[in-house]
Length: 169
Image 1 (cartoon, helix red, strand yellow):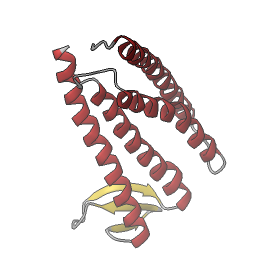
Image 2 (image 1 turned 30 degrees about the horizontal axis):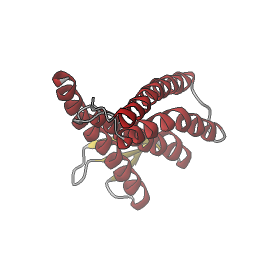
Image 3 (image 1 turned 45 degrees about the vertical axis):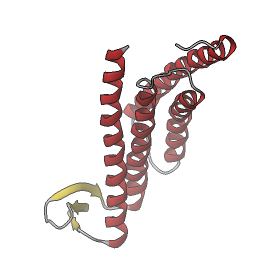
């Protein structure tokens, strides 16, 4: 179990940092777009520069539909995904695995992965054409959500047994 705790702690920090970077990127991109700070428009492209430099950071199409549906929604959604994934890894480095708080983390992750990609893709399809690759990503998230649902049910059963028999696993 020691290996699991070490690996999950490392993955917790990696995914938490990734989630934070995605969220910061989304906030910075939205701020730059809204305030025209560190922004250049060239050849029908909007270029967001790194702060306080002239070096390109993000290269986006110059229309609001693209900004919202192909940049902001995916970036913030993956920021949320990695943040929730970090909480799943956090579950596995706790001394006591079968706790109600751990089941809540698993439940949030699987509900988000099962429903949010479908809802966002459906909503986006009203405003722009959806690529075939995006459907594969949605299916991947669906399978990931179902897998974590199974883990959640196992943890729920473990918590029930632990509470019934005062068992610590």
